[in-house]
Image (cartoon, rainbow, N blue to C red; front, side, top):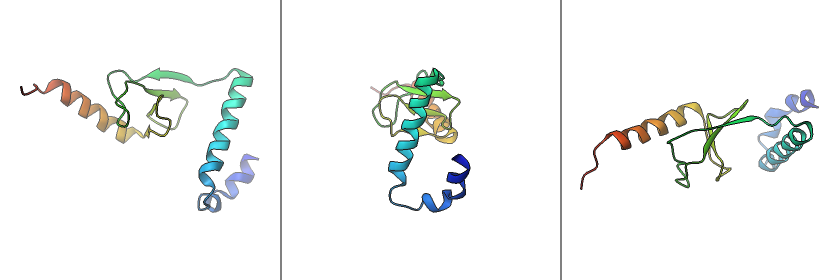
Length: 100
């Protein structure tokens, strides 16, 4: 089935239903993981807040495609470059003295 889907991937990503399709595939993966007890390992990304909800809920799933995802805002997913920029911002905010 994966081989068949990959053959039609370039066509599928241009369809208006691709978001729904992606969610359905994600649901199937999660269902399979629950059945087989093979959920990915999660690692909390400490000290970095989500750019959307300001929660300290960024996690990394191993294996995973994203450097960080927000556990509270499922739509927030950061690639490695965006995550590193967020870490730099958080570090600068902490290391720069606050003006009164």
